[in-house]
Length: 314
Image (cartoon, rainbow, N blue to C red; front, side, top):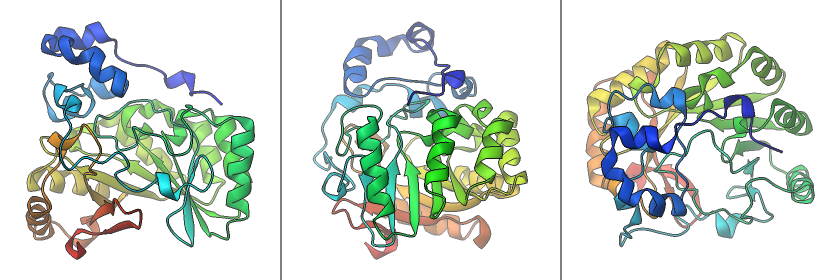
């Protein structure tokens, strides 16, 4: 139950500090709270040490600060975890965490604290218990998450998909963006045999270069439906122009813009968050800028554990 080692390509500390020597003082303290992990293909698209891509993955001393709005469990997962590796907030669907590993650690990640288990991967006993719960749960849809489901081996992923083939499956991943070579012909062939929708996490149009476009096209051409999920982040994509360019770019690649997430109240990421009012104004401007097919739903995952709701309903 290990990381897919063929894509375990990360940027070393010294290489980053050559660009950002100012980060040396905070590196170890930030890394101790949430390990720093930057995928080489993603880093190669950053034009300098403080651009919108770099800001998503570089440590920031502000991560050490606690804001009054920060929550230890920002979306109510811990109280909705009936067994380790399973999160259930809804009657008809649940979330199954395959691993806590990722090819890259985004600094705005809300899942810094695990729900139900503190290990990186489930033990065989934990995994059988989780799958047993899913099979007896009465749900119709299973959301595969993590970590990143594509950070495990093809064998383990395909075994999981086969075990869950009676359900509609939704797989959330940043792998096509962080390490596009992970989207191999063998992986695509295995995915297309399952009733799976792939939700691609992408936040800025410059994340989508030629290699990423090829990876996404490979999935779409195999008949695998793709959805886009984006987090609204200060200093990254908090402008109408950037969001419009991103959504239109994804539509041209036949990826349907699904969710625009208001950033969660996770500890250490207050510097990424916009206010609800700022987000609403930005979204209304976006609505007037792009077509309906390119417009994602603007949602917030409520801390009480009831799930996502439209920001305008808050």
